[in-house]
Amino acid sequence: MSSRKVLVRHVSSLRCDELPDSQAPYIPDWLECHRKPVKMILRLYSSFILFWDFCIILVYFALQMLRSLYQFVKPPKRKSVAGEIVAIFGTSRGVGRDLAIQLAELGAKVACIDINSTDNDILVKGINDSGYIAHGFECDVTNKNDVIRTTSAIEKKFGHVTMLFHCCGVPSPRSIVTEPPPIQTTLNLSVISHFWLLEAILPKMKRNNHGHIVFLTSVAGLSGVKHQTPLSVAQFAVQGLFESVLDELRIEKFQKSIHTSLVHLYPFVVTEKCRNDIRMRIPSAFGTIPAEEAARRIIDGVRRNELEIGIPKYLLVLGHLVRLLPRRATLLLRELFDTGVDF
Image (cartoon, rainbow, N blue to C red; front, top):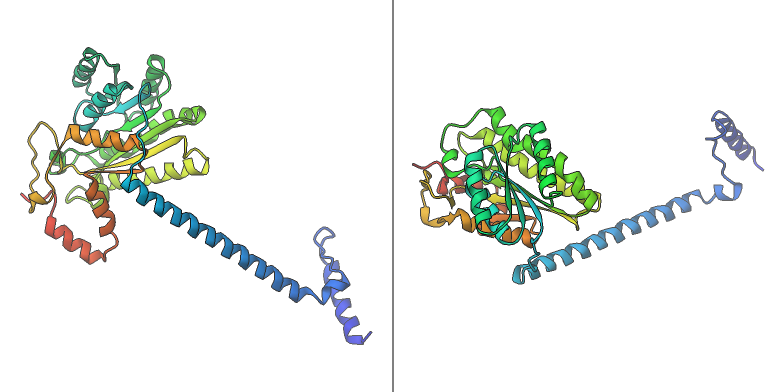
């Protein structure tokens, strides 16, 4: 053996002796000369695994695209809501009120919850007089203790909530052009209340391995509204919350038993039995939808387990397509339509 090889082995043994016994590497003599080929084989193996995973992702992606196209032509079958225990927060007016009426007509047991007990009681009486099942609860969704008390009362009356609709904080057409409420009030009603409701209801849905959560938000969460920054921020936050809950359910393997839906309401399109103060530069481009029709479309999407529901539907598709355009182009489109601010 040459003196050079002896010196190299001597230096290597000194370096290994400096390490703790548990960390000292042991490399057989026969493997010393094959170290570089082994590294190359491991790199090729890692590259092959990465390429294989990428191919699998492409296949699944293509299958999901084909599935979406098929469901666009032939929508999924509607699931039954008969016997479901539905909690709707914000039922004294607007879409929440019509959701309660129509879900009760479909056979659900509806818990009508609102801070306005007077109008809420009138709604509950009308549903019960029609032969359907509903019960009214007064609740301030911005108060955590009040939310816990109300959900406990619902459980005593009907059982565990299986469907949750959060209709609070979604602006009416008139509220978009009026003086905005205090920032903290807006955030508490539109965002923080979601957390109190999810903390009270979602764990029980997981234990029962069954449920559906519906988040209602407005167009303010897609493009913003002039002089209504807190409202827009709150509506953007609701979309972020929806994405987070959806991902949490996916990671915990609940995505097939606990469904989530995000509803995009366009307040200048949905009209109630009241005066709509919003006028647009091109009114004929949008038209209007009665609140009861909006509720009917929301329920149809929920019964088909749609992830995103647009009222009207085409504006949601248009909103996603517009996001692909350069930012300056989207600003020009907003100048053209000028929704919600042209008097």
